[in-house]
Image 1 (cartoon, rainbow, N blue to C red):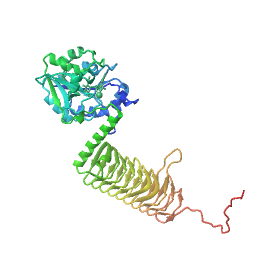
Image 2 (tube, protein in one colour):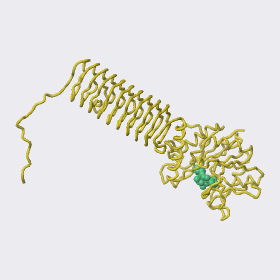
Image 3 (cartoon, protein in one colour):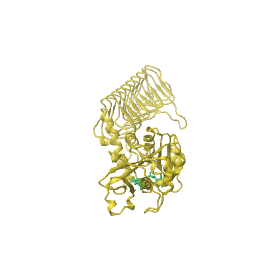
Image 4 (tube, rainbow, N blue to C red):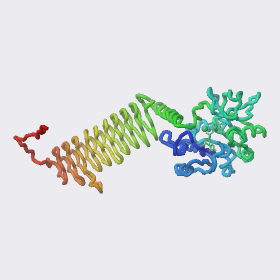
Length: 455
Ligand code: UD1
Ligand code: CA
C-alpha cells in the first residue's frame, strides 16, 4: 500500500504576533516545519506534500533542500480546503497521512504504529483522552462505541463539550473516496470554514470504517499557537534530547539547564555544568568537562579537555588535554593543540596553536601559526590587520614572547627565540637569542606634578 504525506502549513499563526510565518519559528534551533518534514521523511512516503499560504515564498525558500511538492492554498478557508489544494498530487497513492506544520514533536515510531494499525480503506483518527479537552475537536461515538463524527469545540453543544476524547489532528485517509468527501464539505458551521474533520461523518454515513488510534503520549501531538506554547514545547524538546544523552552516560549538574540547538555527541564520562549552550554540530571526546555558561558552536573537542566557565568556542578543533578559559573566545578556523592552555580574556581567531603552548592572559592571536611549547605572555597582540588586509604571524617552537608584545604582521619568529616584554616586533626574529624593541628608560628626578590653581 502506497502512502503520501500532506503537511498542512498554510495557517495564519495570528497569535504568534510575528512577521515571520509560524512554521518557520525555531524549535531547538530548527524551523517547526523542518521537524515535521524530518519525521515525515523517516516514514518513507511515496511523496511528501506541503500546503502553504501564509508567507509561502519564505517557507518554500527555507525548505528548498527538501524533496517535497509544494501546494498553494490561496485563501485560508479551513483544514479541509487546505487538503483540497494537494489533491491533484495524491493520484497514485492509496492513502494519505495528514500532518500539521505546527505540531513538531511527533515521533516517526508513533506515526508508524498509527499507519500500521489503520486498516486499508479506513479513516484513521489520532485521539487521546484529555482532562482538559477545551480547544480540541471531540470524538462523537454512538452507543455501540462507533465513531460518528468529530465536533469542533465551537460547534459543540453543552453535552458534547463534556466529551474528554479529542481529535489530536493527524489523520489517515483513503485517497479514492477522498475526492468526493472533500467536494461535499460545507462551510456551514460556527467558523464558516471547510473542516477536514467533517469527512469523518461522511465516511461513517457511506459505510467506511473509522478507526481511532489512541496516542500513548498526547504531548507528542502538542501544537504551537502562541509564544507561550512555543517555549513550553522547546522545554519538552530539550528534555527529550538531554534524556537521550543521559541514557548514553552524559552527566550534567542540571538537566534543565543544557540547550542543544543542533546535535551533541559525547564520549564516555563527560560532565557539563549548568547553562551550557550547544549550537550546530558539537562533538566531545571522552572525559571532557565543560564549565558553567559555556557556548559551543560547531566544535570538535578531543579527550580530556577542560573548558572553564563563560568561554565561547566556535568552528574550532580543540586537542586532547587542552584547557580553555575561563572567559576565553575561540573563533572559527582555530586549532588548539594537545595540552595547550588558552586562558582568561584570550581571543584566538583562525590560528593554529601547537602542542603544549600557552597563552594564559589577555591576548589576541589572529591569523597565526604558533609552534609547540611556546609561551605567549600576558597582553600580547598579533597586529594582523592593516585596515585593508589580514597578515600572518608565524611563531616557531619553544619561543618565549614577553608580556605586552605587539607582533606586527606579516612577521616570523624563529625557533627558541625570546622576545623581551613590551616589544613592538615589526621585523622577522631570528631563531634563538633575545630580541627586544624598547625605548631606553629615563628618569626626571626633579619632576613636579602639575598643581591645581586655586580659584
Ligand atoms: C484542528 C482540528 C481539531 C483538532 C485540532 C488539533 C479541524 C477543523 N480541526 O483544529 O479537530 O482537535 O486541529 O490541534 O481540522 N491550516 C491550513 N489552512 C487553513 C487552516 C489551517 O493550512 O485554511 C493548517 C494550519 O496551518 C495548521 C493546521 O492546518 O497547521 C491546523 O489548523 P488549526 O487552525 O490550528 O486547526 P484547529 O482549529 O486547531
Ligand atoms: Ca491548532
